[in-house]
Picture 1 (tube, rainbow, N blue to C red):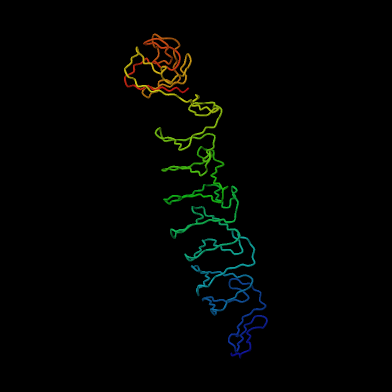
Picture 2 (tube, rainbow, N blue to C red):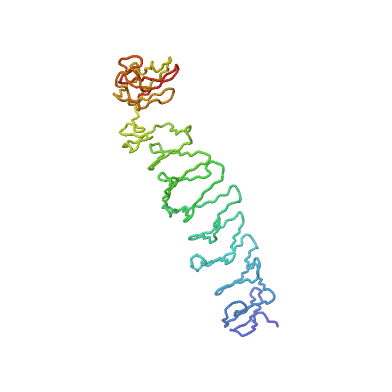
Length: 413
């Protein structure tokens, strides 16, 4: 059957269901239409007001590379029944300017679990996004919510593994909140911990920097822990250094109810460099054992005032036995502390580096014809061998002293 140009061949009923063929003398104006005007059957598997069906073969749609395939109607449902990779595929392969656009410009459904104006869903499998290594994945909109429902390690993972110049950057350049639990960038583990680890063997492997201005602070805060190490700084093999650029008395400020500095052993030390130690004036503590403190400007240790002390060192020039005691600290010395009768007060006496007495041995109150203790402290105003008297600044030893023994005396009055 041949239809001349400018005429239309109608197969079917016009205005109902018909195939219209309209040849034209201008090739670009020729039309072919398959129209169902009255049918209302909805589209579904093997049904529809217009049905294209190939029971045993496929269906191909081909049109000019510079023209469009336009589908418009109520809903578009594409279902693939072939259990194979690429079961549904949108493919643009003609050139570098091509794009694939999935757009909903009217729907307002917010994104949530199983909902959204544009929804990508894989009920039983995963979803993979792959793009060129030198191009970007750009996601921009209101909020981004990423929720992982798989109970496994690395449930959410950001991973850069292509080269030494790669970085991972989390930026908020507009938010200003520094409120606990609602900061401009908030890391929160409601039930577990947060671990930051750097494996680079170099300075600043982990760096926390606040550089917003002179009022900026860095705060490490544990508001629930009650243990002695609720905040701990640990260096397993190296040291810990606190450096402050503030030139003031509180340049480094440690505040607490008690502060403990623990050294390794007696050969270690606590070293204060360049600056004196200042003690606040306080009331004397209820227990003074092994404590150093300042009361009204006077320094006390172990409950006793630490005073400016005088010192004398004497090397024994000849042996002395108990019947010919050595008398030191006579009036020619600078030690003249008077302890008063019955005690020697604040004199410390060492023999060959060993502390012999420090406020625990009584002084003599009268001349003695025989020494009943190993040493006495007093002031010789008379007497002879084996005798001593009370007073101040004199030590008499009963036990033998050998030539070369070193006697060291401190008067801390």
